[in-house]
Image (cartoon, rainbow, N blue to C red; front, side, top):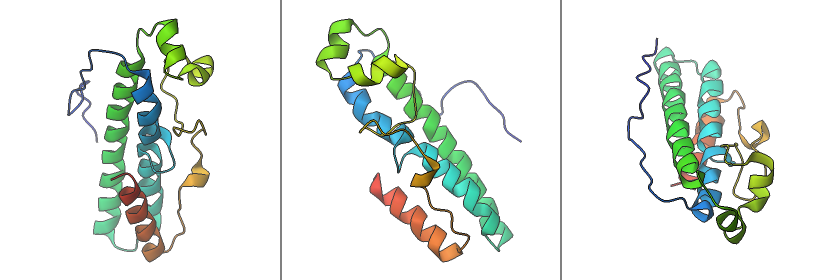
Length: 140
């Protein structure tokens, strides 16, 4: 069971918009090694885990990754709110803005939308855990 307190564990308070920075950070939200993929990777891989304690651990990690997703979403939202047309254009944020305005959309910094094809769930514990380590190490 979850208790949702309607506040982030680590509050995000960004005073000035910065669409250039948001265009990079968005990859941590929906890029191939971002938080959305991480959460679904762990939550999907848990089914093949033969040890109940480790299955529970994968569930907990996947849930924690969802919390990270919320924090990254708050960062991107705050970096892109109240943008002027000039800020959008000069930051190169216009291609994203045309399709999503200031909505937080799961995409890589390259503009490629998030896809389940970017995560590995093989059903082999060693293979899956190696995938997890590789993906977590890529964003470190």
